[in-house]
Picture 1 (cartoon, rainbow, N blue to C red):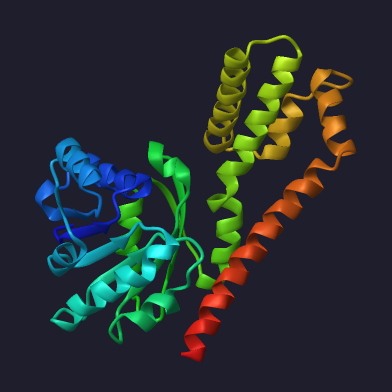
Picture 2: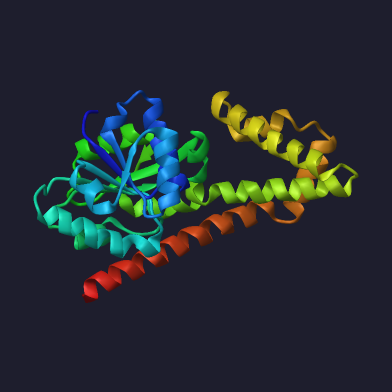
Length: 278
């Protein structure tokens, strides 16, 4: 990749993608970051050796603009980008890592025909273990989508889906880390009640979840078979799983994922309705 890339937003997700791109050996001169807070801008510049500037300057020099910002900042950022786009390049690729907002939101705010690719990342991007869902907007070509996939593969794994499936991606992998963090919290609490120190219980829970995740992704064995392999008849694991079933663990997880998807869909519909009423 030789095109210049601008990352708008120097928070955790923006920094994670920046670090991933640099790890690939990509020339640092091809990367620029837009960050409004001076202290954070200096930190990023010092740590990564990249140019950190304002949004208008970053966008004007870039062929690919990646939005790693909060939903509440999107309108202001798009208004700046649209002004820069009006000065020339109509083929700049806009990539949004903002949760819940459909590609139509960006296409409506940017010059007609602007290609937009939507990404649903998750927080393991911070450690290079993201699971990202990607979908192209109405003007995004297969080449645009492939370019974004290539970028995101520097920080984890990627699946390409139709945009109508992004609510499901949000519910399963986007929000998913929080489900496991809650599981780890509950496991640690139980460990403390059994006499372990908080630090030890937390370490045991975290490493157990980490190890189980690696085993699940690397072994090629289904979760059903992995669970069966560790569950001896009438043993300790069987006793624990029986309690999970008694308290409706499967149902709770299913309902949680469905609720997350419904909320994502609700947000998207509200945005589309606002666009149509304009």
